[in-house]
Length: 100
Image (cartoon, rainbow, N blue to C red):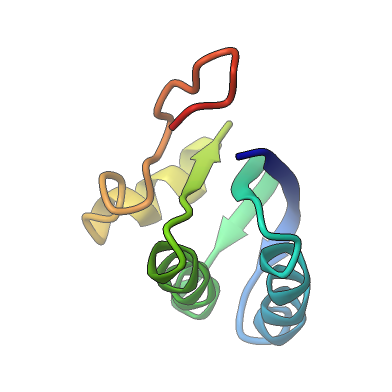
């Protein structure tokens, strides 16, 4: 199964989380695994994390996976504080063939 790269940038908070939800729904509709690149993400709050958890649940229910990578220090601390690194397959290696 292929993967789709989705890039998060800037700040994800209560104001931007609804648009993130819409954008992730579109990405999920592609029928691929979802690779979320956070290289440009500076901040994420609980509302943004909730949207990521919703996407993760939807993908898992369909037998697909979500990988989060390139997480900067601030967002990484938020994910670690909530104990979500394993749940979201955070920084897990992907084989060259794209197998999860």
